[in-house]
Amino acid sequence: MTGREAAKIVLKIFASKHVRPGHMIMHGALERAFLMPEGKNVADLETGINWGIDQGWFEWVGDGLQLKRPGDVAMGQFGWH
Image (cartoon, one colour):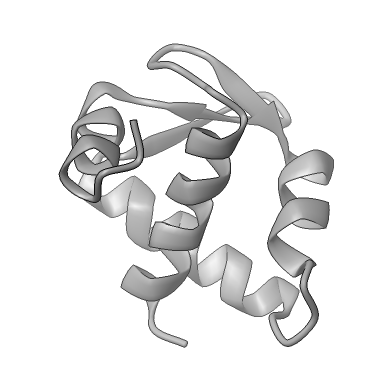
């Protein structure tokens, strides 16, 4: 799985939980959501998070991953609003 593919899954998780820019998902909850259904792994999640951070989609705030405005824009472009 590429970083972009994994980051899109992370964005889809944010969208499914109706997270808006400036709000976050705690790492443990994000990990549980990412790993279900089976077939993905923690390394894919970390790769996706790092790719998304590089794109400006998210940032770490303590133990939570916060959605930033560019990530919200990307969710809209993918039709997830």
